[in-house]
Length: 214
Ligand SMILES: [Zn+2]
Image (cartoon, rainbow, N blue to C red; front, top):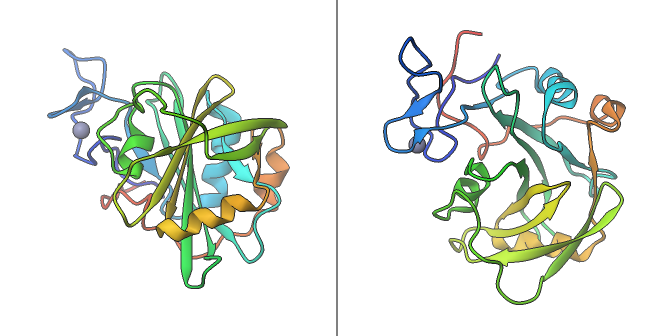
């Protein structure tokens, strides 16, 4: 089951394409790539993304100790295929308590990563100063710039495989996990890493709050 299509920037319900418009439309943001999240069958959704996504589908591999996949989301219509992917993982915060991180890969202009980060968007502003973190993405060291976000979270953005890579963490202290060497693999390169992933409690941060019948 998949949630109903909503705006990736504001989660509003969308007007689907009709005779006069070929795109999904948000009243506030105009033409947008419809956002959906897997409600059940997250394993299947990840498999679907691995074969249809036009952007990377990042998954930590290895997963930090005691972490698991908590959510799978994407934005894009039936014609374009997914132009943004979002994978949520949850586990213990280095300082104690639960933490969640969402990894977003997206083409410019979609605004899913910016909404999760809690900033205006749809794209990050000019990246100021020096990068503060580094991850390995598809075998390449990838610089990540901190983004000024609300105090309940931490967010970083960089570029990998030609599109934005967003990393948003709740709570802000969870950013300590970046001190460990975080290795991201593109599930499109190796669908089996998705198949052997452990799925746990469902992510709140990827939810849309609206559900479709199928
Ligand atoms: Zn909107």
